[in-house]
Image (cartoon, rainbow, N blue to C red; front, side, top):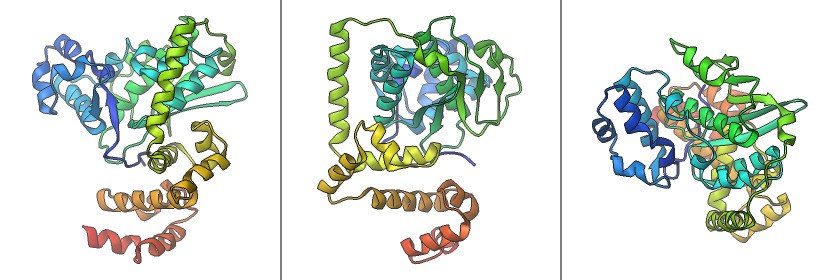
Length: 340
């Protein structure tokens, strides 16, 4: 099933990732203005890299571009020249790390504080590291273009950090194999596995210890100040931020207060105390997020109760049904029948 979670009102994408859409469409003799207008956008919207495009609108644009060009790997071409600069503040923060691992950790932490449509995780076990991208929006209908674009962007980010000699070990893509796989092989130059259970770049963890070149002190201070402002802005609605991060964590695996506190660069007790100031508790917020997701999945998808239970990390459909009855006063099936 799709690893996707709901947050319709907040999910956005930076226009920087789409700046080459008109140019690329022209290469396919497709009318860029018509394609953009079809999804409610204009060329001017793509000229400001910080312009925020609602995530579902951005996803619709990629699907429209594929339809008009017939190119199954459109997002791969779109992001082939991406890199740290296109990621914005998280990319600038990555440059300030002392090692690749530190830079990537700072990048993912800031990336996940944004109200974006996905979550990035760096996982290193033994000599294998994985930079994972997972969707964080429920209403998605066709995510393959967005996933390939995100993985292509992070692939270029790793090249920026490690140097042109960097090479991954394997690319995992959580969507069906396209008719023509050769463009993926040419771009990544390592084995590409489709129909994977996650979209990720797999590489030797020794790269994480590679030192990064020092940056100018004034650049570093500017990034620190910008990151502080971004963090303060995100913390203005702290319970809302925690709810958003819980949604994103659930999209990529089991969530925990410890891992969420790590994203926020604080101890779990500090997180508890900060939530308490708003009269909230982590456990209650996590439960409310699960209930919200369960209702949306039941209303808007054809997923079985068993599939929804698995997605929400319940040990069985029966346990999920019991919890849902406690939340809603009715079974999942009764709720779905009433809402249809």
